[in-house]
Image (tube, one colour):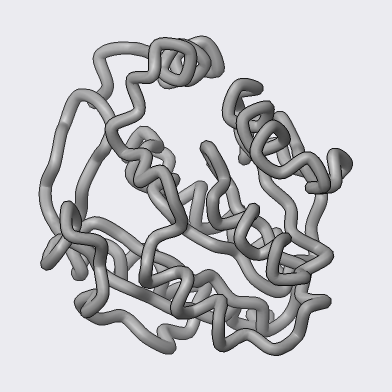
Length: 201
């Protein structure tokens, strides 16, 4: 488990010290390919733990009007606004993901946020995703397929763990080895699409 608290100060320091080895410095190919086939520019989209938000910038520049980003640190939100001054400030949320109040999203994008969370929070993360989505909403993105670290992010995982986490609350639409990963992540990630299940009691 983490040796230090993965709190706001931890992540602020990462950005201020440019200690951001996970940062691809551009939208990655798998997500760009997925976004390019989306036709409804009115989709309400959330990118949690958005970091420098290249995905949000790309969507905004393609005409998507309802893109929201949330991050616990201020610096990456400032970085997004510097690169993309027209991005709506009201859609930039500085908050702990688990305290996010905005909801009713059509689509949530997972890109290196899951692996940054303390693994003890993974079940809570899945429940929060479900709560944030509207009926039949989807989570789409990438998850690492390798152990990585045990005491600091990024934390890894495997397909069995991921499916066990998602299955109770989501219908698995796609979960497969990513064929178009960027070179540093080649053969080490899954692309997935899961859809919110309507739970009837």
